[in-house]
Image (tube, rainbow, N blue to C red):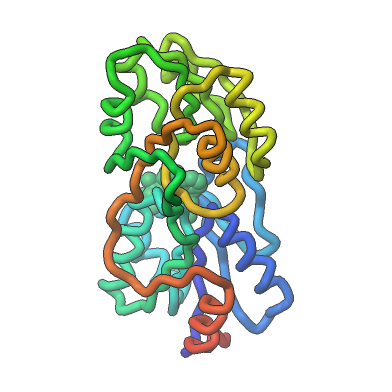
Length: 250
Ligand SMILES: NC(=O)c1ccc[n+]([C@@H]2O[C@H](COP(=O)([O-])OP(=O)(O)OC[C@H]3O[C@@H](n4cnc5c(N)ncnc54)[C@H](OP(=O)(O)O)[C@@H]3O)[C@@H](O)[C@H]2O)c1
């Protein structure tokens, strides 16, 4: 099949794929980034930054750029992009593959409270004031403003707007990977009683879960959003097999 490959990026999986394709000049591929973070780590391949303009914009892009397959390597919580990609690809008959990391699963020693979304996570904190470690991404922070009784230790890559922060919020700006001992020390130093996080999966940010387990702290775990059914792979071997199967030659 002749045509170009579009990789929807924004994750470490997408970056690993970019590295794997770096010396494969016969594969004509472009990566797309949303441009959310202030200092994005750019992939070592052709790339573009910014939204497409919804489903219609993406359809127009796929046609204009002669895209013959799409690899959706966006974050598991980037559900809008995944839905748009599904609709656009279905409309044009373009094959699509989701390349993502497996979700985290609790072990017997974990004390997880699974919730369907951020609003439910706020509810699960309860009325009694608590010291909360938040790693939900800065765009989810405003939801916690309606629970101002808690003290929040919020960690994100970029600083949230001050207006989005609940009244008692301390910020830590950091990008993973994090290690278990440092996570444990952080939780002890801040007297953390409960952790709120999204089930992103992957190893770069799972140290907090090990630390919470060791400290017997509960974790309010926001489940992944539901996205349209698709072929899903969790490793580079599966992605490369998909690419080879579609023979991206000029
Ligand atoms: N959500 C998270 O927790 C999270 C965490 C880490 C990294 N990320 C990464 O950050 C990016 C944005 O995440 P999000 O949660 O804001 O996504 P989202 O809610 O699913 O997407 C919102 C809109 O952002 C644009 N967009 C998203 N990903 C894009 C991409 N790779 N290329 C071009 N446009 C893109 C699209 O705009 P148009 O409709 O205009 O096309 C999309 O409709 C994604 O690439 C994702 O992988 C997200």
